[in-house]
Length: 227
Image 1 (tube, rainbow, N blue to C red):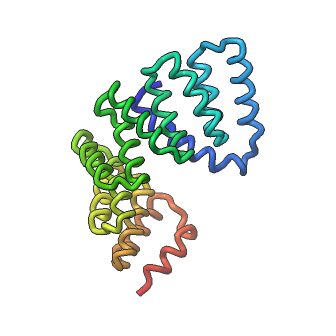
Image 2: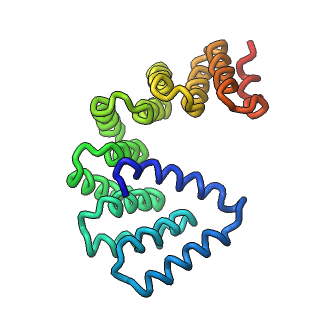
Image 3: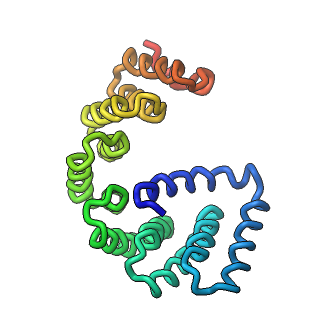
């Protein structure tokens, strides 16, 4: 698996897990069973273990996924994908110390890797190591100045710490780099509402509608923009 896709896959995985109840578990369980059956025949196959672990993650079976990554890393201590995804499962299990260890191990193998640095920065924010989190995200932006995701991540950190003007700026920078991403637009609208800039927030909502967000879905937000 290519390194540049790791973070995206985790995001997609999170989106899928939100829809599992609506769609039913049968398909996911069938896929997990198929992967498990193949793994019984080929227990040393790392690719099969990665596949099985991915289905465990889709089903939010974090402990099972972690055990698969443990098994992979016993055989291949430098497996970057296993380190990255195990860190993600540790976060889900609120085992932040172990998640940090895996992110740091990954970054020793691939220094400056976008996904590893971003994952570690967000983990530090979650674990309330705010100065370290901000230092890491600032470094990431210096290394990847064209990344909308990096600016949006910093904006989210600033929003969480009520640094609203800075968050507004960073979401705006994210929008410049990914103008079709409506999440960035809505995040800036949210910040502008918190700043009391209702007219500007409405402009962002109008822009989001223009780019495809159904206006009825934003009815509550529009009501907050009224003077």
